[in-house]
View 1: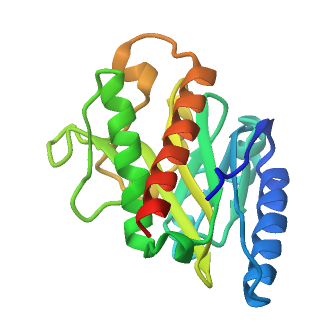
View 2: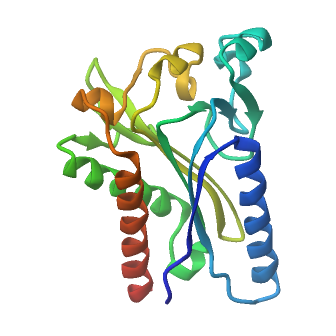
Length: 226
């Protein structure tokens, strides 16, 4: 199986990236319905300041009004993924794999585990111990401890096995933007970034390539076994 194409959208407004995602997702869905091969795509980007809330999210977890959103130059969108509210912004790597899980014989939970453990292994290369937190999606630092803090969020949508949305890793992210929400609906857990954990600026392009390369390797390995 050939590697999926990787498209770096750069710094892009959420609505623009969402439109691109949907176009690829719907084309892939139509192909699958017609029993044509779905090749898939991996989109990677950073977003301008935006809050997105999933289908099961509670708007009360956005703690500011429309005027304050304008003041901090942020947007707000309801989206069709799982999960509650989260923040995307500059300095955060967002990855949207649009793939056919059936090709890889993956269920949704296994796919999310694939994304989570990939990030855990990459963080380990930076000397950061990422972990799974029981009952919570994403990647965490000091999971289960009083200072538990989230470094990577994950949320997906699937239809007929076709995926969209994906993961968001805080790298050089301005964490103050999380002060305006209850991230993922939590009020007692913290948020962190690679920069925050290492006390230094990270080369985001290097890390972006590391993530997409590693994802391609893991999908390639799975496809050989499928």
